[in-house]
Image (cartoon, rainbow, N blue to C red; front, side, top):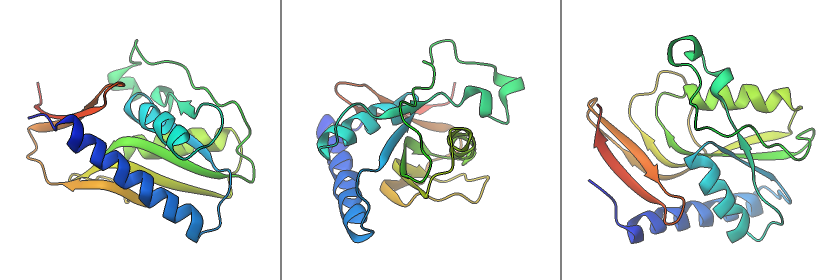
Length: 169
């Protein structure tokens, strides 16, 4: 099942508006937006532009930080981490497409701390689904989904970005 382009765009606008409110309510100016490859990086770039921040969002390749690295290895299509600025004493907005078990988020936070010590890390996800293995929740969520264990959700893109629910294969 694919979400339509409009349905996916509506979720993107929901997280954009929620993030805009969150930044205003918490008096956060000029945060560092960091996306997790690949879908999170696409969303982070989109948020960077739509919120009017200059430059390109930073991006993380968390492959070497995953606790299952020895089992799955490195995805050969993943780009390297691109962290153009220090995160020391900055507010970080960590963006991913799907929050599932929490392991990707844990790996991303570990990598961020290798670049410095941020003031805060705010997690933004397009979809949060059932199946958490770690006590990690997103601060801003486009949609929460309950999916059967034999289903995955994937963000296709980057232009246009479209969510797709697929059978595990």
